[in-house]
Amino acid sequence: MPVRKSSEDRLLDAVDDLVFSRGIESTPVDAVLARAGVSAATLYRGFRSKEALIAAALERRHERWREVWERAIAAAPDDEERLLAVFDAVDSFARRRDGARWCAFLGTAAEYAAPPAELADAVARDTKYLRKRLRELASQLPCADPNGLAEAVLVVLTGELAMRLRDTRRRRSTVGRGIAKTVIAAAVPGS
Image (cartoon, rainbow, N blue to C red):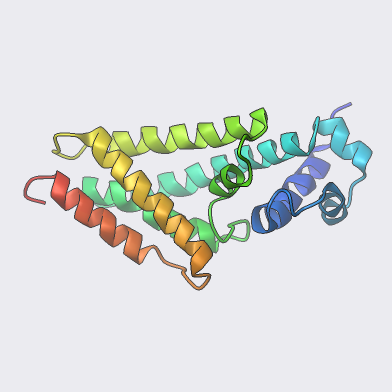
């Protein structure tokens, strides 16, 4: 029997609240169960393992992130701003109730030398999507190497997210966005 949707949502919310702020290894299953208000039987009826639950929470987070990012892209006035919209989206996402102090995917990747398959797959899907979408946006600019530009923006974005761990007061991606603008200016003639 599958887990009820309300129980599943509470479990995923508990992962958002606890695991993505404290860390995977630092958050025992019992803490997730207590926060969700469900039994271990309910958890394991819907998910094979703690890692499967976390992978499901990452997938839900990915879908929510995509929605925020796509809205930021749609609101941008031109192609350069659409590429830079990833920084606006990070700021918007961080202000959400379910936003973490940094990236749940980077946090998951950082916790393991060799992550369990379902977690590695979730991180890989998110990274693949980021690369693909940034390449699509970079290809709208008149630059010789849109793939290289997209990768440079991704590296800047990753650094911006990592800085949120060092400076917990950091609420805006001003520095990362500024660096990305400089990278774009170097890649796009006359920018």
